[in-house]
Length: 258
Image (cartoon, rainbow, N blue to C red; front, side, top):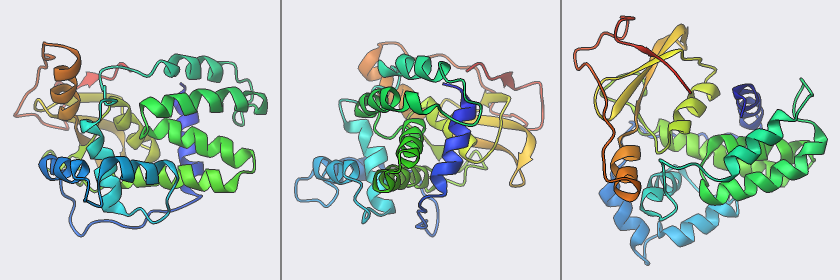
């Protein structure tokens, strides 16, 4: 899918609802505690019940709920970060049919909505899909549905931003999919042209133009390869990284190829 649509509708979605809750201090996800809560039938974070509230667009979900929803998804059988939903290609092909430079053509809404609902069954926290569903519902005049998807989109984004500052290698944003990295950057209006691994878990995205005073953002995507590799492939991916990196040096950065 074209990133211009992502950025357009992420901005549109954010205008519908806000998610003001932020932690006093960003903290990385405690996966052991999250797993214990989501598997405990008597816990308020018991995953089947919590996820049902999420699907129904429960407006009472708070930041801690979204942290358990998003990071708790790694313990769900549907979490396959090294695979892509089968609907992804169909969504991309549908968007390629669009000829309206102002937005998505109305005649594509029904097809796109059907495909997106299927995709969200596989990747329920995919911000691009949530933002597209927000846009379609908004354009169809279904404010209740638009607010539901917008609220969930902002909740997922808040869960990620609560995991770190994002502006230092010691406090990166923790993500579960590679697409979450690009979606977070798009939502900030940041356009990265180069990236580098500075450790097995942490990746740095360099910006040619400062965004909110920052020259780049850091993401921890280690769960993608540690959890995903166990499920889908017996071998670990190999990365080259320089622990003595200099974020301002062009020599240690490589072009983004996605």
